[in-house]
Length: 117
Image (cartoon, rainbow, N blue to C red; front, side, top):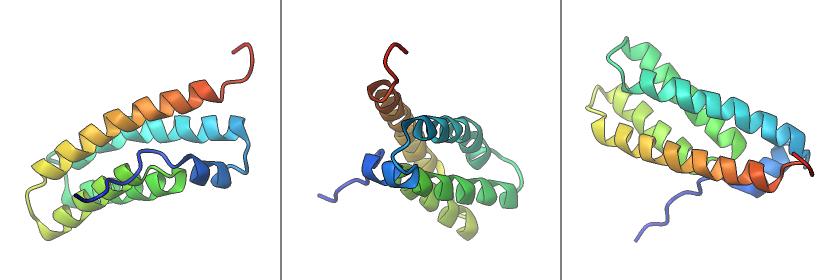
């Protein structure tokens, strides 16, 4: 059995945000916006270049915050799109990873919320 990439590597996120919980929440909020906006473009019927660019952007953003599973799924979509292959399975995996990652982000934000928030 192959290990699945992490949903959210908190140590990586902490390193990227210099241990600043407020910055981490802000970065995760921006990433969540991309999780809402980019997968529909990737899965859509639009221009191939726009779909590839969306997958590439999501891959990079995911790597930046430590969302390795999203990065892997976006990369699989990008490769399939570049090859002109069907991407239904890749999109399904991306959608599942996105839902799980959103839940992990919510847990992370709740655990690191300032007192009284």
